[in-house]
Length: 107
Image (cartoon, rainbow, N blue to C red; front, side, top):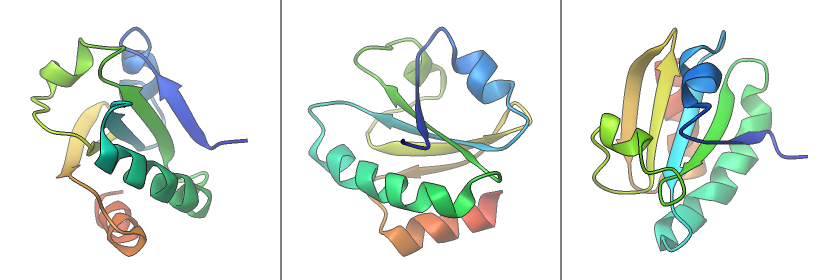
């Protein structure tokens, strides 16, 4: 079972902004090659942060309303939200160690 939730425009507020734990959101699209590289890295890192961070993916093609609210211009973009606020953003593919560092610095 994946530890990464699929979220939508309609449940973004409740699952991300309303979360009791920090949430890493991966903004992606099916046609995006770099997104397909980052996805498995997120899946691999998620168990290490279980209980500390919620991991979520938002397909920007199927959910066109949320990405513009956060000025997403390129994907993959990952953002960390905590207590309803955007805390950190990273654009592009990260290695496993870069993702771990990004999380450790921002949660």
